Image (cartoon, rainbow, N blue to C red; front, top):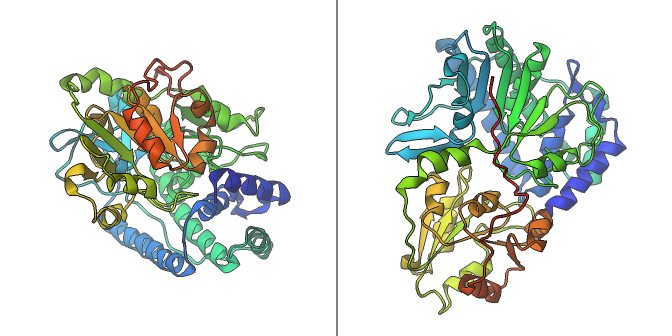
Length: 463
């Protein structure tokens, strides 16, 4: 299903039902349900069997974390006024074995570092040296049986009927996510109570059970929460756009503010509720882009004598069933690949991508392509390529800041980037091999400065 169609269905559901009645211990958990529905609608070939397996894997993971918490306690810096929560996926290697978190570290460096703390939800390999010190979130809570009230089960069943999804599967997923949410809600509350000077909590990707739990804990303690933009927040991303029925007091599970790369993201967030009093977006820019150009980029001197194409891949989603589309595969088997090299970069979260790409490209001459695991610094790659292709990744906006032209493909990108395509900021194809040939050989690709860019050159003062 196209992302635009998925968003409209979710907005329809939100307006048909009293979603504020979906609660747990007084907390409205509709954002949790909405996240489940969003991922269900845009996912491809998800089966009931797989979701049952994921359910038990999640329960095992939580149980394992509880056991660990008995033996290790989360370290803290009690003087911290700001806490940043991030994920290992955002780490970028800037020197051998030395890493920077592209989302939070450039912001931390704008603060008085001794008054900040950074936490990761998962362990980081000991052989990695990080630019800023960090802790790991390990404390947990008791695992108890969850019984969802009958009126809420009825709503979930009616939603499942409208969306034509398995109602028992939806109930199972909701309980699974609720378990994880409560685990992090209680853990975060326990952690925050140890920080007497804590004023703000910064998050990367607010719409997971972990971060929703952190938001709810912070709100109950009067601590502000800010979600930092980590990628494209387009008009059809249902966890940012399409919120039409925000409660008078807002959602406990959502951040107080959204740090956005530019006005376009702010406008997308506010489109359905322009007069909202809670969950307000603001322009903060993308500090990592400025940090990289100032501190790292100077060591690169681009001297590409051939065409080098970076293809940023996504896991199957929406109307994109293949990470590497057929038209690119056909191009690679044609007679048009002289002096052309493709780099297929996996999404950092794509655990099955490497095996897929190896199998998908097994008939292609290995000299004309490279598979990048997604762990290498994306901006370093921009300094080594001449072109960029993607289905809908926000990397297209970042590529434009390095003078790299982007070709988009597929119906999702045609919807998401319709303004940029119309203004010829990006090129687009309906998956035509002839379009790809013409684009690669064009001498007139738009490399001029973009007016009103998606990522603005803004720096927020961190007090």
